[in-house]
Image: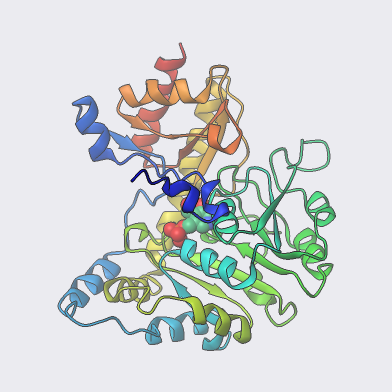
Length: 372
Ligand SMILES: Cc1ncc(COP(=O)(O)O)c(C=O)c1O
């Protein structure tokens, strides 16, 4: 029998391209027979996790013959305290991607539309199309009325209609690093019709040091249609454990909980996240190091005559005269893994994650060699 499984798949799934993760160091070293490769491709924390988190996860390993605490009680209570909301507002996810998927499954059907920006985080199209809904992609700023490549909220507003159920906003956005300030974001959310939910994805929240950058977790009472997502994968350095969460109206959290898989966050991950929240020194060191490293990278890119997009996150997107994919492959030969952005519709851009000082230096040297 000749099965064409693709024809059997749901239409939204048929049109999808799988998410492309950054290449792991071990894979590059195996393929190229090299050692000491550097990965600056997935916006991970180069300082690693808090030692408190490692100890807590290790302790929790003793109990892995048991199912995790399904409600994530301790972590949820701690997060509620941190954000000064009721614990009923919190939904835990296997990474914040999991929560983005839950939101799409709850609010989208093939009769509905979701709005997001050109160059927005790659998981939005995946969860929208997997739900069978129609993506409405707003052109990003071209630089004349706002930061080039950044979300254009006016353009996004124009795409909102009676079938719209969801809007995704990444603040700051990955891969561009662009961000929205408090006033413009608030005006946008306040102007949304009642049938539209808005997700503000704050995966890089801890890194942002601009005064006008909002903490939208404080806006929940004002805007019941707001869902804020956060993650432990970035500044907290726990990407491998997969913990994220959302803050929302309790009724929305109740709906997310209906489709959430039981035990979606494992016990070592819950324990590590809980401990990480108490290690303020680790976050401070991470954020300080990122600030310096981002300046180091920006200065190095300028020295090489390359233009880059000003970033509020732990990464920088920069432009090359040659196709980014070619530069990416040349950098792999140098043992340097970054991210080409062709799949974001930015064929001449690459994104580099801010690493340790030494890693940033090695990246800039390798880049200079492959571009010369
Ligand atoms: C903007 C944005 N949102 C969400 C995520 C998802 O992260 P995680 O699922 O690890 O929490 C990422 C990861 O790269 C991201 O860049």
